[in-house]
Length: 302
Image (cartoon, rainbow, N blue to C red; front, top):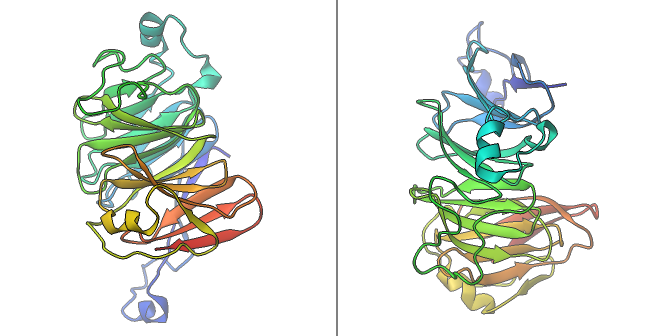
C-alpha cells in the first residue's frame, strides 16, 4: 500500500515490564506510519546508530525519515537523473525501470548503498544529501568505464551489471569495499573510495542475497548440515575464514562462500530442490540459514 510501518518490539521478555512507564509503547504497538512513496515499498530499516530510517520503493526513490516525527527529511529521486543518464548512456531507462530493490547502510550510518531494476547501484550520503557515485549499465561515469583495480582478474571482471541489482552490502568492519549481486548471475566487489570494480564472481543463475562475514579469522573445520558440499578445498577452506569472505544466495538453490581477495569460491552448500528465497548468517559467519521455494529451510554449519 506504499506505506512503511514502525512497531514497538521488546525482545527482553517478561522482565521488560519492570520499570516500564505509563507512556511507554506496549509491545506490538504501531508507533509510526511513513507515507510518501508512490509505488510499493521494497525495503527499509534503521541506520546502525538508530537515529534515522531509510526506505526504498519501486517509484525510483530513496527516502530518509525522522523516526520520532515521521517527517521525510530528504528524497533521493533516481527518476530525476534520467536526463543525465541520457547523455551518458544514450538510452535512459523508462520510469518503470528505475525502481529501487534493495539497500544497505555503512557502519558509520553516513551512507546508503541502493540497487535498482535498471542494473545500477548508487552510493548516497544521507548527511549531506549527495549522490556520490553510480554503478550503471555503462559503468561509472565518474571513474571511467571498465576500470579495474590492480590485482583483480581483469579478463573475467565486468564493470557493470546487465540485469536488476537485487542485493547490496557494505563491508561490516569499515573496509572500503561494497558488494553487489544481480539477476545476471554476477557478484561484483567494488572499491568504495574509487568506485571501481576489483573482481567479479560468476554464478549460473541470479544472485539475490550477499552477506559479508562479520568477524575475524576462525580456525574450525567441519561438514555442512543438510547436505553441504565442499568445493575447492573442502574443510580446509574454513581454516582461512576471514572478514574478506562473503556468502551469496543464488537462484540455483545453492549458497556459496567466496574469498573477496581472489574471487575464489571456497565452498558450496546445497540440498535444495528449488530456487532460494533468502539467507542469513550467525555472528562469525560459521552458521547459515537459508530458505527455498521447495518449502524447506536448512541450517548449514562448519
